Length: 134
Image 1: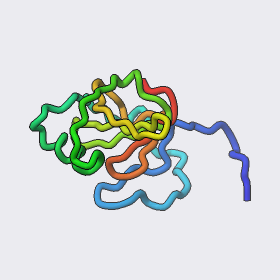
Image 2: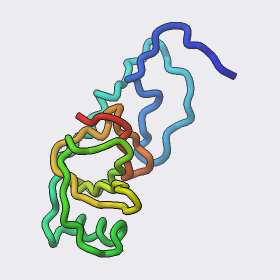
Image 3: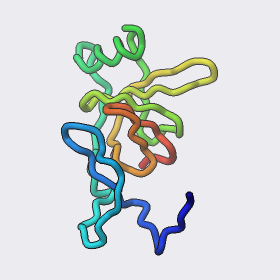
């Protein structure tokens, strides 16, 4: 079934907040008098940095997502493209990007809000860029 909303839709309003110990609750109606929580209010700002060679976050991400091989490239936040995957470990973010037939990997450098509408949360520490990132 398809339905039209009865009035204007606030696309920045979050349907349900994340739960600290589990998945999101099932979607339901939003109480009209409840204080809205908007994407811009869900501050998930991270100041990402290129990790030091001996950083434990770097070692974990290289082991899990690059077969233990060193990742040497870095990428500024403004250079992110739609379809980039962001693998987050604290303030360390690994960018996985398809370049032709190869999956390239870079360290993200700069401040990013993971709660913005152009970043989609896929799993606990995995995000996908869907549009222009600010």
